[in-house]
Length: 175
Image (tube, rainbow, N blue to C red; front, side, top):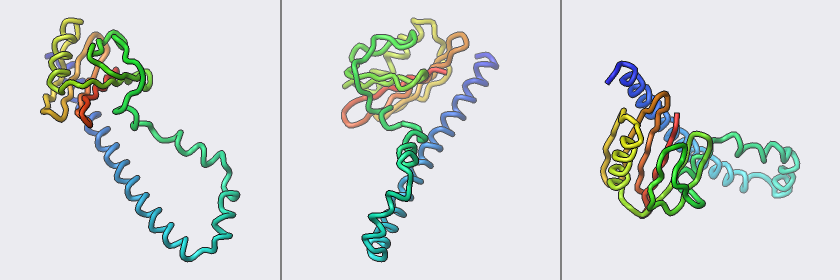
């Protein structure tokens, strides 16, 4: 493995770790905010007259409230893709057993199927090498999930496989 590949592998691992930490931190902050909002709501409902609460929505511009969701990244549907799956995404094969698939942005596509994590792992280890991709990194998992990374020319593909609610979800991320 060349120095460039090792460097890219280490960089991908650090980025993945930071992304997981970021998502976990964001979820914890949302949970804390929900608990705080619930406590404030309870306190307000007992301390502030109903007339004051009814007047509050007119004090905040509706545009401000509508803009709030658009500033947050949408990770929610990444693991619950909707729509008809494609056979191939950016030259990367999608498993023929896919039951639903969705492109989330220019760099991410996910699909789900009713097979196992091991089946997806075996499929991509074989198919990517056939397609000229070189394995960079592999974090073989168990029945709950696995992560694979491949390189071809200047492109890097990360494949995240997760078992969720009886389905297996595969997230393809191109960099």
